Length: 429
Ligand code: SDX
Image (tube, rainbow, N blue to C red; front, side):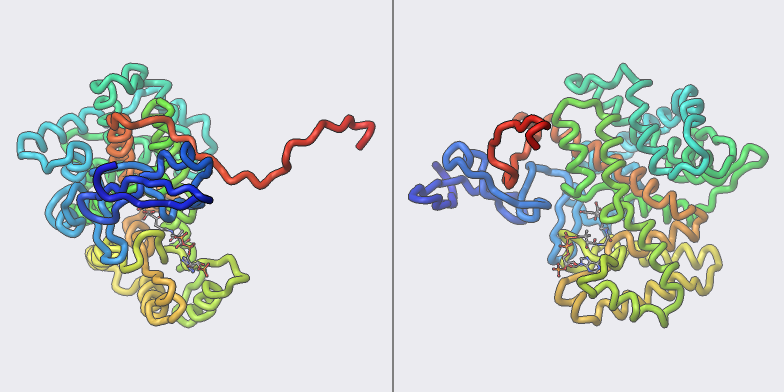
């Protein structure tokens, strides 16, 4: 075996495995032959030490608080680019030229409408349905409408499905919001940019012209950039696993939305704001810090901690800056929730429990305050996360499909159940 190797001793056996270096970041030990050579599996619940794939899309250095999309630092993309430029970068691997950008924007814009029958599909939901439940259902239902882009072996159909997903998520998200508040759906307008179009579909009404606030639109566009991709997180891994069976892209994205909904993942932005509201005032913070540290209390500080970041989440820093920008544009001088959040962060970052466990604010800690100030209900926060993350899911799904070594994902287990035993007729039990 050429190159660096690692040897595992199993009983009296020495098993040699290849070490594969990344372009940056940790190398991997290729254990794919371990079971065939030793009859043993590796065991890694939660995949804390397991790389599931090779990828060129996003790189995270959790210790340094670094996040790169195709090698470009998130801080620079958030500062200089727009969300559709980031979408192009994640999908194709390079920043677009002006012509490529104009063409991409044009193509996305002209896929923003959904099949008119979808408006009837929505009528089946209760008005008080959680918007994430509506998104799981309606995105999955897209496979019932777009039969001409579900053949994943056809690169053209994959590209069309990708454009449709990126383009239609804002329309479906806005419809999910409008449906829950009993207002009519707003059609997209092709003379608006991606995020302005979304704001108008959410907050505009047919009775009057909607004036987009460019500061808020730019802030939300930046928030979408921050949420666009994040390596092999739980929902992206769900999309990859669903896609590995050959399921159509709409069904795979619906699976990703379902996974993102959990409070340990994308649902944390909704949970974090609810936590800040429950704390209410800075004087109640010590009680909640104590709850978070109490092993017998399931309470966790929502918006704190991360599987990979053991330093400050670089997105949280940009998020915090955006929060202040939005509150100032809206003339919100003192937001009690922001006061609690800032105070909570200060106290937690000095507390030895959080310092020792390297628990820092993550992207979900400040996003809720910003989105609430913009007028979104708490129940829409994870929908916005899903809207932005769709391009990451699609890029990762495409990379998986195009990977020649790709095969259906099928983990094994450590079986700790009953050994084989014979059936006992009920009369003898
Ligand atoms: C996202 O993976 C991604 O990239 C996700 C994401 C993305 O962009 O896709 O970044 C988006 O999901 C961000 C994370 C949002 N979730 C939350 O904010 C929920 C609160 N955070 C935690 O539940 C937790 O920190 C996780 C789920 C984010 C990470 O959990 P891990 O890596 O499995 O860590 P762990 O649960 O093993 O915790 C390690 C220790 C434990 O204590 P011990 O058992 O070692 O004594 O830290 C403690 C935990 O009890 N801990 C917390 C805590 N998070 C971890 N204690 C209090 N409050 C917290 N928030």
